[in-house]
Length: 467
Image (tube, rainbow, N blue to C red; front, top):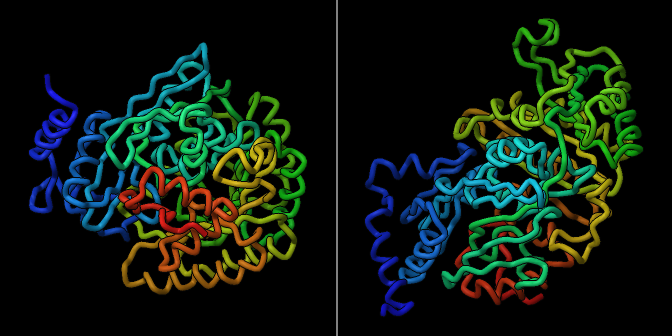
């Protein structure tokens, strides 16, 4: 009989001919991620199609003393999927979604995109909270929280995570849930990709769709902040059913808009009603009549279509991106005015920025239940700068950092959303700010499951940091 050690050796040997190396034609295509600013070069890339591939890859990296990065959707703005000099595990071949409509659960492979999940679950009239772009990877979004349209009634993605199959830094496969490895399960829900490779996620599902109400009136910035103040008060009253944001942008040269508005800065009051579409249509009607509009794309539509609405705006590998965020206790008139002023001065017309509402089901989760921590913030402000040319890097990034720093006086205890943390030289400080009081506990869990910090291409919690 072959020993476990023999099997491991065989796995490692078998995968070497499948590795993509820098001199091979497929290597460069495999390392492309969504943000065109990211141009890192892994030592090798392993395309994975099974849990066994992941295990073999981790063991190969251990044998070579290489760190490991993990690419699922490759949509994280900081490009964590690509580790310079690392073994990159490419999970894009693992996108299977298995739905149990009776139990209302879905097992989702680690390389799946949210569009994969939405299509599979909507076939049964079900959904789980995902992101706002269907091409986002399930793994990256979920492990740092997961903010989507359904947060009002069903919370964050992590609030719907029931279990996970994880490959550890030793190459072992373990299942974690509320009763098995509960410390790891707690850490996965908001602690980022620090603790292993999640090969499969199990999510709770909820009845939603297939038709939902999407609210999207677009107001020119010239109307001022009045409609945003009205939106703030309105969604505060309906935080249990409306996932919403005000998104600042620039009106494109498109026949969807009156030519008089082309090139003007604007804001969209976007919202999804997490319930009956007809009820939602009636509820959001006041948001559509707050002043002169540049356009109005409101209407009932398929849930999967809503989830794809923003996909075409920012295709993979085409634009340069730099994002930052603040969580906010409240949203005052002063903050609204500052957000509008920032939107008017961003040097790139492709950039967006947004105020997001919270409350509802998101706020109902106790602070100690997940690594995400306490939920007594009511809002988020995100600065999502996007541009085309490398020569504009310093100008746009500098503007974004300055605007973020000025707004920091409004932040909720200095906290931010890890998925919108940017890619700064002070990433360790930003991670501490995001995780707050939970950082020390996460450091201890990291030391237990990844003591050598093999999984370091993330919003990293260092295993030796016990503070």
